[in-house]
Length: 254
Image (cartoon, rainbow, N blue to C red):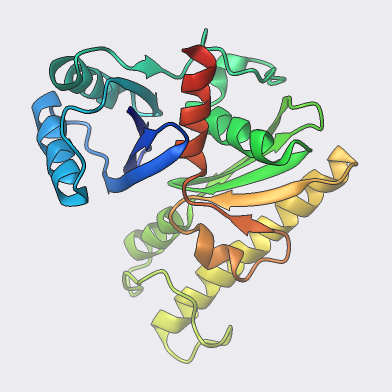
């Protein structure tokens, strides 16, 4: 079985595959100070809860935008899984030309998402990933990574309001009943949710216009379903897109 690990700035998503079938997946907080043994204990607990046999994983792949976590995850794989993981980065065979001015600047998660989206649709596409940052990634009709845009994430924006406006509280990210809030909390929720819907739709619209050919728009990340439900441009939401991309990349490099 294949262990796929995607380490983001806020959350780490872990999945286990048997062939193309995703047997289980888990999301945990990313902590730079977490040790290899802690990852091993957490992973064993996840396997037990899911009824999966511990020790059945024989290969692993890792994508991370947090360098400090890489060593801990690699150590966990070496100690508990019997080998080092394949790490997404320069030199890996992605099967996707990178048209960025400096390909090394593109985050591993963005390439993984682009590979997964193009493999599914086989046409021009735009991937919107709702993480610590909200990223927009464009893929050409020929399967090339064209480039994208980066905006502050929804939770990051909410935290900024709480931290820098003395009278504004921390709020749950959820859709309010109306865009016209009747309380401070619902007013903030309206600004955050509907504001981000507008941000997403406008960036996607401009990207699609610049690309000049039909594109498929897919969203991923923990908050993708919330924004996708309100968006006029997002056609599909897939929270497992990154894990699927990691599986595809492992198969291309094995």
